[in-house]
Length: 362
Image 1 (cartoon, one colour):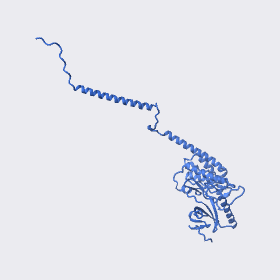
Image 2 (cartoon, rainbow, N blue to C red):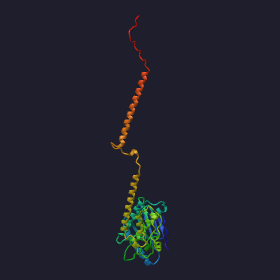
Image 3 (cartoon, helix red, strand yellow):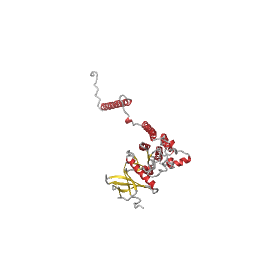
Image 4 (cartoon, rainbow, N blue to C red):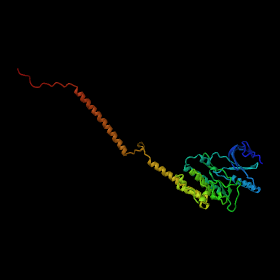
């Protein structure tokens, strides 16, 4: 039995280069550690994978698949992916070393969110996810992520998203079944029927379903119904607008199409999803423009902000008022002067009148 502890202790050195600092997360297949690259003096994330015990032939296949997937992950380069730049085996465990991206997963954000996310922000996030999945699907051969869900998406301080877990990703070969080094079918709340049943047949439309389910959760703050339950009841996904009335009809159509239970009813590619998403964004922009125009038309402009043009009625009124004020001042001045003169005339003695006629005769 291996003496390696279940979780690596802080200070453990891996591959004579990476010093473990603490656990970032853990699961049944292993853990993810924050470590220090001693050669580059750089923080990195180290993902640990443990091969399940069983048939030796299957174990060898799993190990080979690990090597192949680690190699193609190391050559991927996209702003919404975490860069993988090293892989190795130590003490019977398998490790991928990738860039460390500080941030929070969408699952962590959803746990504390009490109000609906702004639609504009969600559309920015969705555009990024569609772009990175289109990039993966455009590889030769195409790469299926197969586990799009809030806990596998980190958002950093600049609102850039990263897909962080390629645990069950695989290359898509239409004519053959390809195993994955981490056996799994994805999370039941977000994976499509063809993957949930474990019967295979996954393709690009499987990632479309998972992205739609993730978007449903972000829009409504409710975990989406499982594809198996919808299939058993022969139902479509419930209307997201019933939970969030601010959702545009075109956006609801987008989500419902992406979450169609049977893959033949979904969009056929991320290119089609992108085209539909552009329509949604145009509708949101028009709605914002209409709202801004309506706000402007209802605004009451103070009189002090009204421009006065030469010869306008307002200016004529001001001129008339000034003239009347001047005339009033002149009239008051004249009335005061007259009163003064009349007062002075009443206080002076009148001169004695002269006697007229000839002297009297003796």
